[in-house]
Amino acid sequence: MTDQPATPPAAAATTPAALLQVARTVAVEAAALAARRRSEGVTVAATKSSLVDVVTHTDREVEEHLRARLAELRPGDGFLGEEGAEHGSTTGLTWVVDPIDGTVNFLYGIPQWAVSVAVVEGDPVPGAWRALAGCVVNPLSGETWTASRGGGAWLGDQRLRPSSPATLAESLVATGFSYEAERRVEQVAAVGRLIGKVRDIRRQGAASLDLCAVATGRLDAYVERGLKPWDHAAGALVAEEAGAVVRASDDSAEGGRLTSAAAPSIADELWRAVAEARI
Picture 1: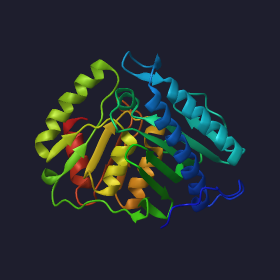
Picture 2: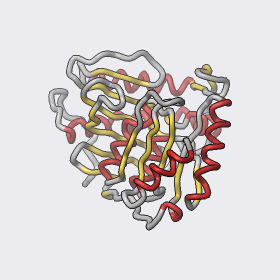
Picture 3: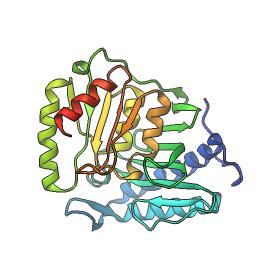
């Protein structure tokens, strides 16, 4: 696979490959904007669910850029972003975006954040939608992950395949924690019940990049409860199209929906271990 052209296809083109060109175009643009703003300095604009759940002015600016560009390139499609109001769809397609996944990393200058852009068909609700294309860009590492339904997953022009650890005990697993302090304490206890069954645990702070790391073979698995739609829409498709096993529980469980992506060789063993650990 070669890099997609900078000019996206006409708005009428709705094949996964054509939609991927749009996703990649706007994600790369947005990532460049975010990186430029980061080099100029970052300020917190507000907090959301808790004191540590921050949003920067750049989050808002990048999301508005994505909203405007997608309205230009894909008029009629819906839009669901982390920072603004949802816009309904007249085409059956909705763009699900995270302008900066890993905002705390972005704030602190840790180079583990990304712009995530996906397009889904159906109701823009995890479990109800069908993801068609997605792109995740880490501008500081210079890496761009892409995937389209039936078209595989790619890092640049490298086709991706997950790892194949022999056992869960030999597997490197990533997770993430809630912004709510009480919930974080519970999650740390659950990870304590899991860590003795795996090679080690990583907590890197950006779900989209963790999912892409599973697709790339840099992680053997990733599991987290309570992700928002924009956290995983693109990354889960990248992992799935690479050949990882992507699973999710229903939303009724305490703490929200449980999402996992794992190498096929340990996916079942991981799911059982996660249930036993009560993550």
